[in-house]
Image 1: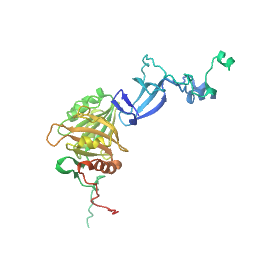
Image 2: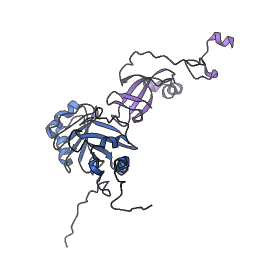
Image 3: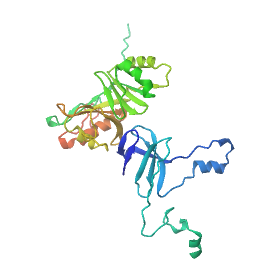
Image 4: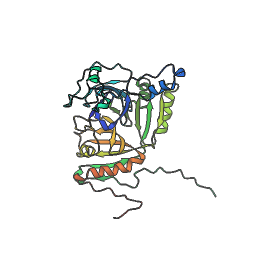
Amino acid sequence: MFVIDCPNCGARDQSEFTYAGEAHIARPTDSENMTDAEWAEFVFMRTNTKGLFAERWWHATGCRKFFNMLRNTATDEIHAVYRIGEKPPKVTADLPATPAGEASIGSGNDAVKIMTRDEEAAS
Amino acid sequence: MNATVTAPVRRSPLAHRSAMSAPDDLLHLSERAFDAKIVLRGLPEVLAPAIEKVTGLAMPEATRSTANDAHRLLWQSPDEFLLLGPVDGEPELMTALTAELDGRHVQIVNVTDYHTTLVLSGPKARETLMTLSTLDLHPRGFTVDQVAGTTFGHALGWLVQTGDDAAEGGPVFEVLVRWSHADYLFCELTHGARAFGMPEARPVSGELMEI
């Protein structure tokens, strides 16, 4: 549980909010000519970032407005909260070091780790 | 024979409950149904002149409310406000506001029978609300005229402080809760105040189940 600083209502408990997915996904303008694969890309495919992630939240019990948040998905630290339509502020966030030294992208599962060509050749 | 038509009588959602108090005036809990309640949606600068003319109230700042003897205007969202008025005052308010805002891009909805008002007063009112809510209800964090929409247990409600802490009898809070959630919230508030000697809520009419 954490406290979220709603741009309209101020600091409130997370239980008042609803997660609303990845932010800054623009609706396609040329929707008449899109293929099924392009539609699937727009509707379903998300980046699933580990680390700093721009996402939308909805203050369900208070002002009932959507807003954006920059959150570190690895540590749950909230780096910035900004309104819909605003550009995300410049922030930097460090990923926590893990004892196993797992990849900074993806899970700790070796099968999905992103490896460089040198690492691949060595393994 | 002349048939007599009787106008339907409104029945409050807590008609089967009576007002309750904890000993030593620590806490009083009662219901005030049928207050006129009107939701106004639109840009504040569009709504402001009409509300000022009809009720004499200024627009509240974010998370605040403004009030005079007859009315209270609650901020609910940057473009949504809830106007409270006297009992049976909603037809006049609706007519006046609709006339003032004719042709403007606004929404005016009569929600009088959608919510009811629970009034919680006394020195232990804050601590009782704290048992049900995650809000910062310290006197520094929640002050008179402040407004917050939040959950109380499982029920959604709007909390507004109408009486100052320094006043005799302690602070006064009003919780606007949906009609169908009112009984749940009334019982939860009495349950939350058990530590201050509040008796358990018992229906005064209807089926009384003995265990």
